[in-house]
Length: 197
Image (cartoon, rainbow, N blue to C red):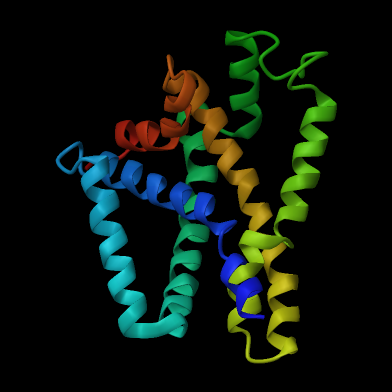
């Protein structure tokens, strides 16, 4: 038993790396470059480790509740406000994108096609019931009722993605020239040019 539980955490390492890289991007952008991404990652890793050691898993779980409520509120606000602010509404935003970049809103026949999109949505939906997202709830739930509740609530996070897409579409014309990994910065670039620091 000890051997299987020891190896069970290995698949979480890429997930942890992704979270820390995201932290570095957020802090570097939010600090307007005053704090480097690398420094933010090291400081963040040290703070998170110390916090979990002191507060335990339950303390970290309550922080997640507060963080998730804040994320939900902010994503809903940005997903509604940015298209309204820049375009006058969602329909107008899609009309402006289609007029400025004809064919941008259609799926190509190969590559990122309709089949690719449908399979990505399906795999993302299934991912909410699989390993990285359920790891914490499996090992910290005090009984099966809590685990069942988490299994019902967790897929609601996928609804937030719709508003993230709206922000991305709003950035399409307002933050031009983003390529490669910089595409991930569209939310930050659009927020920095929209709101007062």
